[in-house]
Image 1: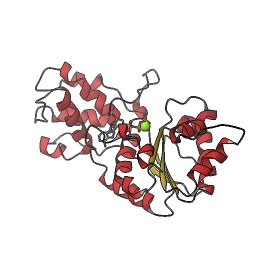
Image 2: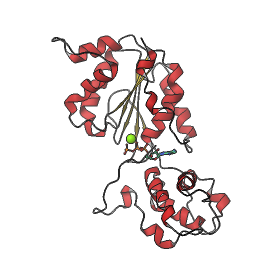
Image 3: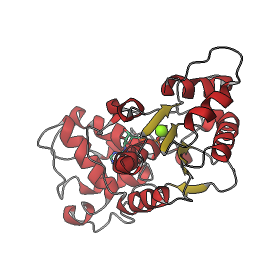
Length: 265
Ligand SMILES: Nc1ncnc2c1ncn2[C@@H]1O[C@H](COP(=O)(O)OP(=O)(O)OP(=O)(O)O)[C@@H](O)[C@H]1O
Ligand SMILES: [Mg+2]
């Protein structure tokens, strides 16, 4: 087995640091290294950081899996019938003759110690469940990490619901130093600094930043979108009106508000 072939070097390492998530990283990597830790699903609302956490966990797990890692992004796949074909293509398994594809995949994966990551599964959940169920029964050394809005419900699935980033509960007496302890605020500052060099959390803007993090419920994607607008605002303060222009988290979003997708990693 050519180990290089099975990695996805274009994904590693992510270009920005992971903010927080230390306990999640420790728990997920520990679980997937255990012999029985063979199926873990990271769940949570769109933009909460499932893919991002999976990327970092996989990078750390890489040495553990002698036959490598295989990352399949299912977001662009629209037809559930293609799910096994996507996996076959990523593995380089040819589909000649009339041997069923699932048999070919099983044959290829049987005996290999490999971590399979199926990212963004929610729109193909039945097909993914069927594939994973089939492979897990026949490939005892295969471990699977899924990211999805919802779990598969398969027996033995460890579901890990991802919480939003930690954020301050009250903004009334919050200082910049206190706010900087919260991961949601740290993510905002990190992204705002990238688009406006010299941006800093100050006693003048801390309430606006903390209120924004609350408004989006600590959702990383929404925080990134908010930070991307910082260059449009006059320094050093962020006007209160800025907050009302921001995307809301799904829970608070009016029905008419357009859904957002990922921005850059
Ligand atoms: N802990 C974090 N540190 C730094 N950036 C983060 C963190 N969590 C998420 N992000 C960033 O927030 C954005 C959304 O994260 P991500 O795409 O992982 O969410 P998701 O839950 O997989 O969303 P979807 O359900 O739409 O696939 C990405 O740009 C990602 O890099
Ligand atoms: Mg994702």
